[in-house]
Amino acid sequence: MDEIIKNASGEKIDYSFHPGSEKNFYLLIIGHGLIGSKDSPLVSALAEKVASEGMSVLRFSFTGNGDSEGRFEECTISKEIEDLQSILTIVTERGWRPIFAGHSLGSAVGVLTASIDSRIQLLISLSGIVSTDVFCESEFGTITPGQGYMWGNSNCPLSQEFVNDMKQIKSVFPRASGLDLPWLLAHGTADEIVPVTESHLLLPNFESSRELIEIEGADHLFSGNATNVLADSIIGWLGRKLQVN
Figure 1 (cartoon, rainbow, N blue to C red):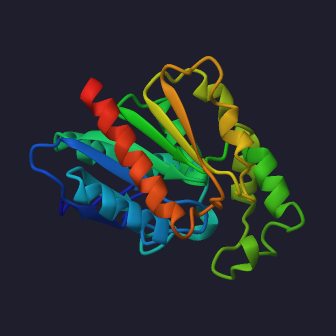
Figure 2 (cartoon, rainbow, N blue to C red; figure 1 turned 135 degrees about the horizontal axis):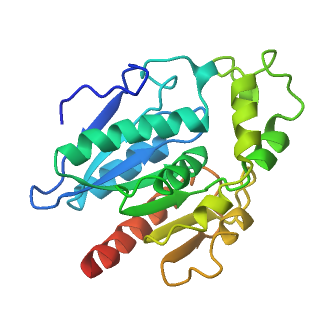
Figure 3 (tube, one colour; figure 1 turned 45 degrees about the vertical axis):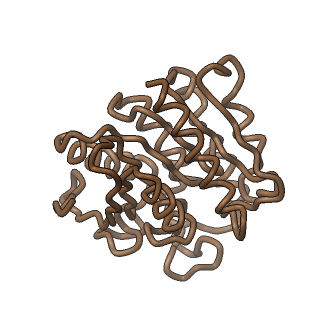
């Protein structure tokens, strides 16, 4: 792929494309977590491993992150949903069948997008945030918006827009209740930023379409060998689901 992709505001979305087999029309789209980018180690490693198995992958930076256009201060889940939908429009016009994998906040973006956009055919959540208001308060409750930074990163100021959006959404759970597509949830048991209990919330009554993989000892970023375990689990799940479909 070599198209320029822009969101509804005309901001360019930076992405990298990893070609797979020409016979495979599924495309894994990977969205990063908060203060990340398409070049975050987890995103890059996952893209390379999946593409090596024959599925094409597109990893991208939400606007305001990485080398995408836009201001970080304007980043919200709602705006990132618009970014993802702009990508879905381009790839489906080219005949791809999109699968979305989102990490952390990117997972919330994926869930909320899938709830309004049927073009996402399979969904993968990695260390997914469910309760956005609880997350925002626990991680940034002591910071005054406009006067502090996320996790001390001076490139990532905490904005009032972000806080308002997180609190307004409150939780992805109500929208997730209407989703019945194949959905893989993966979470580390040692995740101290988003506890694995968040993923547990999404399982009841959907055991036939949703699967949770808990990776023992893995942290929020699936550091170290957990990245390989995660990638192998995702590749295995995709193989099983696409054989059925």
